[in-house]
Structure formats: structure tokens, C-alpha cells
Image (tube, rainbow, N blue to C red; front, side, top):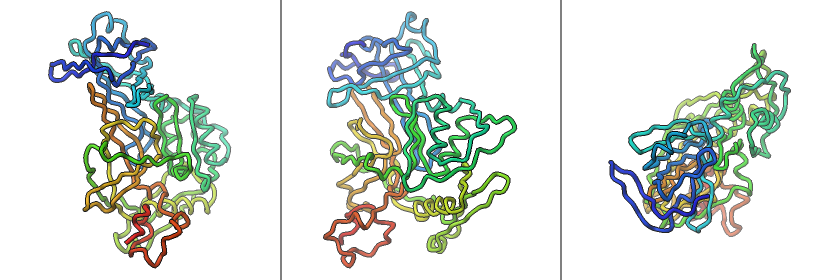
Length: 395
């Protein structure tokens, strides 16, 4: 490992901006197991982890890195397809890996080398699976079978309240299917997130698992939030949900609807295309879950920029945002983290969190969890679906 760099900066419009501070954020960067001499080369880093939306498809992590200046000795032996690892120094002074993946693209412009790398999920997506003979089994067992077959280190977070039995995979002529294709349908079967982490393993997280105690709430210091985030509300509503169930040669669709929502917004239908659920009761439950989480529009924030990185955060955790402007729908909000982007540029390190409404993850406030001193008769008029903070219950 190289020593801590003392020269770090950026390459902007042909100019080299150099700082000589000791707390350089990038501790070390390696390509194909070889450390890049950061004491001689400036490195700007942008890393994306997770998804853009709670209902987004599986999305590999990625890194974009600019190295300057590089020489012929460096570029001559350089090749894409090898491993890239980035370790950063946290504000507390400890080192932490923030990316691991494979280099996929490189562009050399003079002595400025621009690199792009993708995480382990991108490589897994290209694996061809033989699904011949896979049996009917619970979603959690099917997830483990899929990830075992792919050959990657993985974690599965199951929803203890919803683990339906799935039909055997569709009988294709060849029995072969890409990991990416099958993973997308498996994600939809229960509503799940699939992503890769900073250390290179793959996580398949049923959204219902986010209510577990393993997912924490991080209280943000308002002084470390770049600015008051903009709120937005969109008509991404589904109030009629259809879910297919049964074997491929005799499928049936169960439909659930929210009449109050259709009365307000009209008929907004969707059909969940997924790995086939076996039982009608499970298909109905899947539809009801989707309605509970998405039949009404809600205020939310698309993203939140932090002036200092939060490195112990995980997808599925929540952040508590306080001291919001007076016109905000709530004085504080506790959204779910779907992903983030690290931007390390000279002595600046900003982290932009991608957030989702907690109700979309089934994290609406439960009356049993309300403080004992709250009486229903004192709660301001509201729809219970709008209560996801204790503050919503006080006049």
C-alpha cells in the first residue's frame, strides 16, 4: 500500500489545481492489484451505488475516475478488464473501501486518463444460467439457487411476512437464460432491491425486510446537509394491481384495487410481471402490498447532498432529516436510502443520497409503536397512510 498522498487536486479545463493538505480523502487506489502512486498522480473519483428509485430494476455500481498526469510507463502496461479498488479515508481518519469492480472503459487524452468501472452485478448479469429442472420452492430458496448458480458472494434479506412459493421456471427450449433476465423477474415477485456493495458482493433485499432491526436510522446533522432539498410529488400511482399466478400453461390473474384512490385519481392499473407465484392467496397478498405502498401520491425528496460522507450507511437504512423549512410538508422526514453517489474532487468529498418514501417500503407508522401518551382523539385529522413520523400525530 502506498503512503498517504500529500498532493491531491483536480484537473479542470487544462489547469492543475494542487492542494498540500494532509487529510487527502483517497487513501489508495489499485488497478489489477497494483497501487497507483497517488503522491504523483491526481485522482478525481465519482462512485455510484444502488438504484435511483424504490421500484428501479437491479443496477450495478459504477466508478468514473480521472488520473492526471500519467506517463508511457503507466499506460503501456494498462488494460481494461482487470479489477479496480478504491479505498478512502473517512472523516474520522480510518480507511474504508468504497468501490470494487472491473474496468470496462478507458480514454487517454494527452496525459489525462479517464476510467470507467462497474461492480460485480454487471459481471453477474452476463452469466448464462441453466434453469432446467429447478423445482417449485419458496422465493428465498429460489433466490439462493439463482445466486449460488451465478458464483458470486451474496447476501439475501427475506421478508419474514411474505415468502411465497414460486412455480418452476418457464420451460424454455434451451433451458438457458441470462442472470439479468431472471433476476429482474425474481425481484418483482416480492418487490425487492438488487445491488452490489462496495466490497463486491451482491445483495438481494426483499423490500419488506427493511422493517428489521438490522436496518438503522441515521440522524443527520443539518449543518452537514448542503441545502434544504426540494420536495416533489408525482402521479406515479397504481390503484389497480394485477398479479399472475399458477403454472405457465394455466395462468390466472388476480386483481386487487383501492376504490378510494380510483375515485380520486381515476383508474391507474399495473400488472406485476414476475417469476410465477403458485398460490392465489400469495398473488392477492402481493397485489395488496403493492396497493398499500403505491395507491396514493406523496411528497418526497429525490436526493439529498451531504457535505461529509456517511460511510456506515447501507441501502435500506433510513436517514432522519430535521430543521426543514416552514413550508415543508413535515418538520422532519425519515426516508429510506436507495443508493448514493460519492464525488471526491480534490479536498472536497460530497455524498448525494438517493431517497424514497418510507411508505413505499412498507414502513408506515404502526399504532402499536406510537408513544403511550398519544391519544387518538388528540391526533389532527389525517389519513393513516400519511403518518410515517410521530410528529404527524401532534396538533
